[in-house]
Length: 327
Image (cartoon, rainbow, N blue to C red; front, side):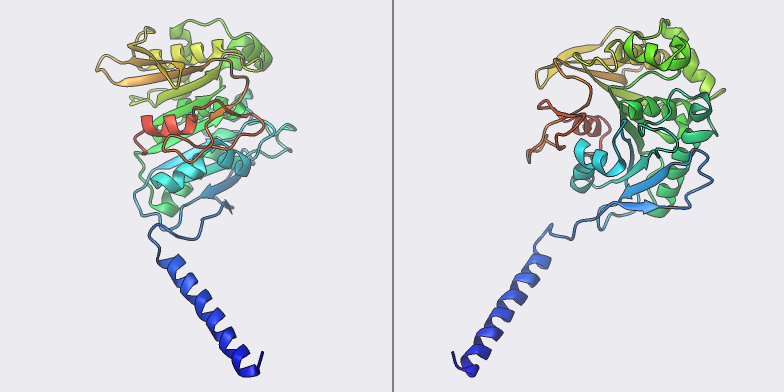
């Protein structure tokens, strides 16, 4: 090949690449992917947690915020991706706060949902998560009336904590394989709570929540809960107790107003006197301990299967997000 022809070929290749790059940037919906970022200095952080967040590129002001709390042995990045919350953030347009436990606080990286000093308003890990919410709302000009908290297992139990100790901050909570607020104290041990459950009436459960935020006049957060029937780490009775706790807080009875199936799984809705859905439960038949997901590109699909993130053809994050009006 002569130098002239080589130079011409080189120009042609460069021009082709340039056209491709311009087309990529001009294609509707095509943008560089956002990434998970760590935020430091978000407050006094009495619980010594780490704060990560995900903000989709070009997210406008006034959008919702979802706080997603990982389970034991997990971390912020893995849970955010596995659960499907980051995928849905891009799809529906909201930001995600992902608190992360440190092994110095808990050797298994579990949030300390059973420690009195970490579950009270203004103290420990609960206060740290509340400070993350305030920082995120300030930085993104988020909608203070559309903040949601969710989590798996120990993160689900910490979701109960945030709903009880800081009810004014959250419109709703979503709990997968989690536990009612004050369960460890009611049962006398976190392990009894997890493996057996605590013997409490609906009112006693509700009183534990009301005591966490004395004098609070409402509205209290609503609840969407998921539980595997074959979960031997957190027994299914705990979802029943969550239902009893939060229906009582909302002044509703414990009789379901809707009993049907979603994706083949038993689903119930409990309404208050005004007809508002205040508790929603999904009993995932045959599922063990984990977050339900449904990997794929379909409109109702999300998540990536992994340890404690289980493909059961139903994505819990999607169902929560729909209940909350996110998408």
